Every structure is written in C-alpha cells, then in structure tokens.
Length: 138
Ligand code: AMP
Ligand code: ZN
Image (cartoon, rainbow, N blue to C red; front, side, top):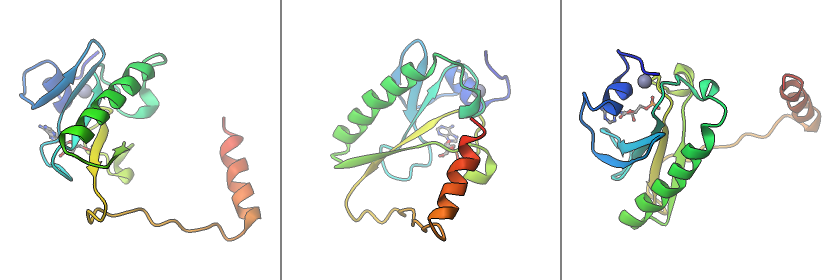
C-alpha cells in the first residue's frame, strides 16, 4: 500500500532521497530534514497509514522494536542522557505529513526545549467524568 502523492511513500520507494538510519521489511527511519535537535529521527511503517488510528493490527510490534533500536542508537550517537518519542495525529496536533511517523528526539538537561505544562482537573469528580467519557467509548 502506498500513496503516490505522499512524500514519505516517495522516500520509502527511493524516489526522494533521505539520510537513512535504519530499514527492515516493515519500517524505515531517517533524519528529520528540519531537526528540533541534531539527530532528530523519524521512524515510520512502510505501508501508508495516515495516522496512528489507521495502523493495521499486527504492525505495532515491528514499529515498537524499531523505535527501541533507533532510540538507543540516536541516544548513543548524540551522547544524549535522554530522548523523547513523539507522534502527531491530525492538524490540530501539529501533523503536517499524513503518513504515520514517530519523532525520536535526543534530549539534554536544560536544553531549552519546551516541556508540557500540566494543569490539574477542577476536582476529582471532573477527573472521574473524563475517565468515564473516554472509557465508555472503548
Ligand atoms: P509532523 O509535523 O509530525 O507531520 O512531522 C513532519 C516532519 O517531517 C517535520 O518534522 C519535517 O521537518 C519532516 N520532513 C518534511 N520533509 C522531510 C524530508 N524530505 N525529509 C526528512 N524529513 C522531512
Ligand atoms: Zn505515505
């Protein structure tokens, strides 16, 4: 499965070049062209799934193992004490390329990258209502 006008499908097929990090039967990883930090890598399934919600059953294990492998290598190569794995779904969440991909970002203490500020629920009842609203859909 591939989409002709998808940039990442064209990278996977070799029509558009990339700085390749890792490839196996199911997964490709390459450097992000506009990195948040040097070594910022994208890890993606080869089939064209627009978002995480489209990922076919059974495809997750290969992705997760590639993320572990690539994450460890990015961390080692950049001497980073930590790394983030991030993944955007839909425009509101910052998704620009609609071929599922995970960002692996090396992190350093006090590197200036923004941390997400948490905001508590109004009270425990509000938290329970939210949990119920989500759980009732599953
Ligand atoms: P997202 O906002 O999660 O959809 O992320 C898309 C990412 O793809 C951005 O971080 C871009 O810098 C990156 N990107 C766009 N074009 C290329 C390319 N040709 N090669 C590598 N990374 C790219
Ligand atoms: Zn694609």
